[in-house]
Image (cartoon, rainbow, N blue to C red; front, side, top):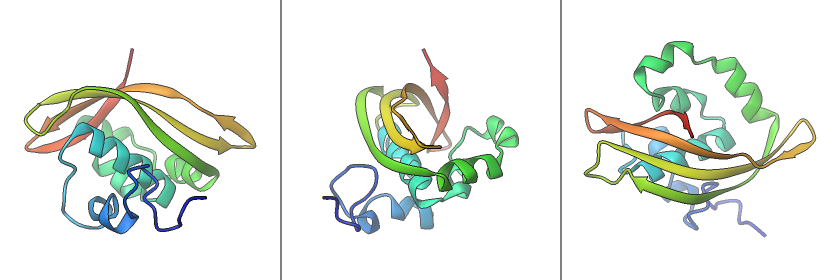
Length: 132
């Protein structure tokens, strides 16, 4: 059974010592994987503004906050698995993270696997888009 204070990202740390610091302060995720994990946790915790802020700047104008909020609120978030990563470390400018985000949405279990592109700009990691 999962402890309610566990971080939804699956790190085995508490939410307060893991992804919360990215959601509620100016602290930034140091790697592409950390950003991926914090974005998943943002869905679970309904931190929609954080999802927008960590989206590649050119893509933010197309961000539909209501669509993301409805998806976040109407889902039961089951878990995140990081399947693979390439680059995306603190010294990199780009990286990919392949993950599976399991949730229940509209009564159906979804287990989409996605390979995502992340880029760093001005020292901050952003989610760019799914690839491959």
